[in-house]
Image (cartoon, rainbow, N blue to C red):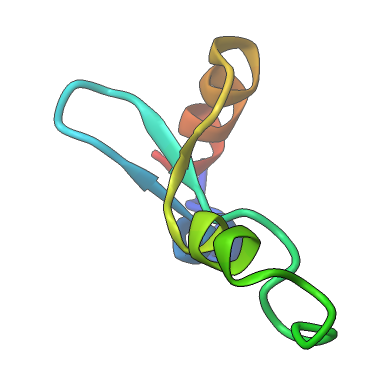
Length: 60
């Protein structure tokens, strides 16, 4: 099975096997969001295990 390049660009797999994603809402309409909210959005989030399993299958 070929690697889904679009998913490879959007997700990261850690050494321990966790799948990380970037939260939505970073591109526009940032003026109305608080600084605290924008700072929280910058960080990578861990995907839930059932979804992570599907993503790993498509990436590798």
